[in-house]
Length: 333
Image (cartoon, rainbow, N blue to C red; front, top):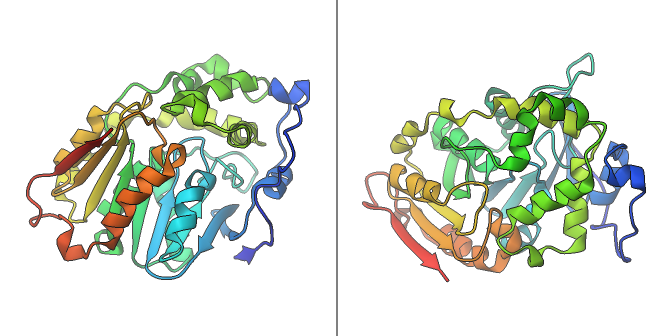
């Protein structure tokens, strides 16, 4: 594991217009450039399954591990992590094939397919390598699926569980992800994918697209255009069949759980929030009016209030299997 001294973000002046070839996705952003631009204070690297995995490890106290969603990065937690690290040890990572980490590769250099079994191996290895024997897991979207699946497989290792617009139940893939089920898109996207499509997808993730700042939008674009990422996504998307995920096992989960959801989530139906809360014994649920698929990035102050209350409550007072009865739900206006 190595630390790097870097400030974040590197962009301080108005953003320069990207070259035409870059905007069209004809060229990719080299990994070294992504590393230079998007590492930040607290950034570290650890070798996992042959890849230099980018993560941040900050603060002291009980451990929280934050896992981002599809095509996102550890930066989606920036504002939330900055506050929680005052009282907790907060660990965030860039899942492969996203963020600074990028794709996993075989010994021959071929890009690995990131399916659920591979993510299970990856997250288990990450936790073992960092020596994390017990932690609170907070996961968004794909990261939520990875988090609750980990909790089911390592029940004594999870203190609390927070699911934010989590994946898991059968659903139609969002159009911007489902495009990669087309063989034509999978073949062409590594060589041509206009940034306008990526920007449209990011705006679609927010409940109110006006909340997205230029730096955030540029970050999403450059990570998606990162070297090898589009090819890896093309390999990954056809494996995203949530019909094969055992959500019935959630009924046996004995972990205090908080389900947070943006009411304007266009990617995962809001009905899934109620389903998580119904299946996980004693789970609490909060629905945020006006927010989208990444409420912790779109309005971190609203999410922080609920996280602090949940994390600060003694475990005995947090509903869990056999102790909490019916799930508690509320909606914020």
